[in-house]
Length: 411
Image (cartoon, rainbow, N blue to C red):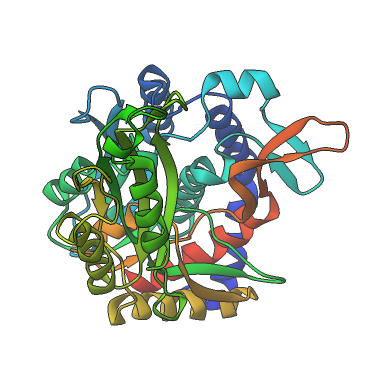
């Protein structure tokens, strides 16, 4: 049997050996635009990934998204003869349209230990991490690599949280799958990294107010001002935020009115609600739907004609609350990190990932990718130019060592 120090040395040497290829793979991914609404780019990204994993013995299945505006989901399977398997999760799309990349010259750029590039941490670095870990495992523990049941799942439209993807995952999930590992970026404050133990769920609602239009001068009393009614509801909606319950209610968009010489007859606003507890989330949704029944605050002065309120749900994503099953996975990863000399914590995040859905049917751990900053955003330089999100290059090897050791323990 190989001793633990020898195993550690072998793994470190294999990671160092494969690191240039992993970085070259990541550069290819970053250089290929795969904005969610660029389906041809998403499919090209999928072909690139499938080709790279084929050398490890993975067979590709391209599954069309239910929404024709999106590309195809990608599933990579390597069946093993053993009794344990893992689901490894990444996604194909990014938030950067080709026009934005071209306008700001967003591209691969290395500066010291930073790698800038669109999607480099969200989540193309995570895909490269999966490849690096599996290539190293094949070299250092070929028996485990051959006998484990591997399913790699990449969502074509994670940035839209395409609901058909988790269903497709579940349909293809080997019965012996122990856990789902999601390779979104890890985070960190100071030295060390943080994984993800829980994520907020969300509900996006649209509230439409119908009033009655009228001439703002000669027939003003006959008008029921939809904008004024919406303003009342906006205040009530925002007031639902309760930080003590980790509930946020954000009014993010308002549309209404028109020419200022008429009383506006219609106004609508859209709301994003987030909470770690599905019951708290539902309570906030119910209180907003109650606006339909609570009576109008704004009525026409002439005859009492009331504004009417309609609420509709645009989308809904379940919360992923902290659980004992995820806690057990965190303990495995922290033990591995300790051996590797890496500080590792776990946190709750307000943002969403495929983990929100997959955690409903499988123990899940998230944040196993690279460390970096500015996901979905950019930095502005002193000269006015912009650079996109960046990854810390050294985190690729560090987290690969931790992930490799933890996966060995899990399997």
